[in-house]
Image 1 (cartoon, rainbow, N blue to C red):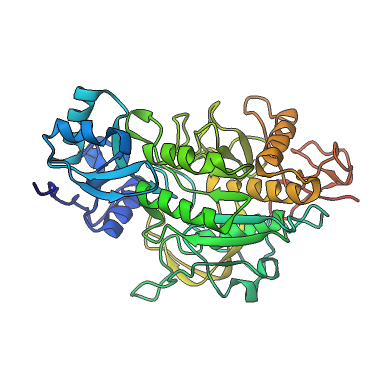
Image 2: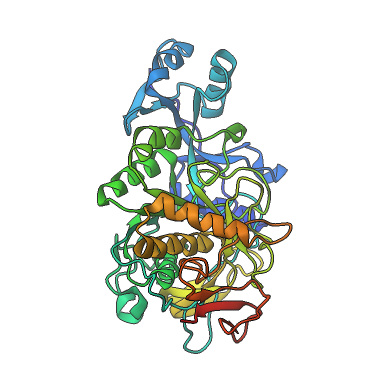
Length: 447
């Protein structure tokens, strides 16, 4: 029997909200392959997740009993990493999942979720913003002896702007999968430069770390779960110590993602010391955002511009391991004209010359990944050990009402070598200094 073909989502030409604009962009990029649960999301304002139409994910061990629900009509579409299969559905995807759950219970099959660098709720995290003059990166490149030398980091994101190292000295020797910068109108494409910006933030924390930016999110900063776990599997072949991942999704019934369950069980847990650092998401609520919500991932939320409280857009809750600066960061970006697509700035043109200011848990994540890499190079710890040490430090300097926090300069802190002093707005030492144009306090090497 052929796989059921579902009709495409209807796109409104003039999205009324930021949420509509973000989802319409993804739906357009996936050209009918993606759907939204619930189908009436535009009218109701409720969005649970996006998914691949006509497909579900199952563990190999469950294929036979899932197929039996449809009398064998659910055909294998793709055999993915060991233990994971994508099946076609002979009825619409959400109906197929309802039938499987009624027969076999929750979690036996799941959607092939769309994972994105944008959230699914109305979100105040920004599109890239212009930075006047000749800006320096903020936070600035570290001058510490904890510099990430000999450590390999994989950034799984939108790809890499190959001209960036020639413009920005802190990105020397960074490499990655090149991304297409301009659209058919000669404007910077949505989310282009996201991976390069992340590499810049990470390099400022670990200036000597080896970095490769994987081009996994080429379609409007999004990809299917099954494709992402395959890309992560490929990234492991580069033998990274740290993986920085600023993408995720909410899920059906808030359950863990089957694709990532299998990726961890079959691959990641067998690689001693490799640590995955993941963005907590920008929905501004407490619901789990995957894969950051996994206990084996280091989940990173964003501090606001003062570094004294949570950024209003950041997800939060006890599943978030640590918060780090993520609002108003400045780093490398594309060159050209960007046309805003999200209300209230839709249609506004912004001209960039290789730098931008950007906000989101996407950018707090590489800051923490960079601190882990920097610490590894000085202490001899592996990725998991270095992450655990930094999380212990983060809890020791927790902010009341929020939790564990990390700042630039924390890689080898006072307790280790006495070379750094970091602050959260309560400075009593020479290591803190104000930054012009911001209310933040930054840390610097005092040794």
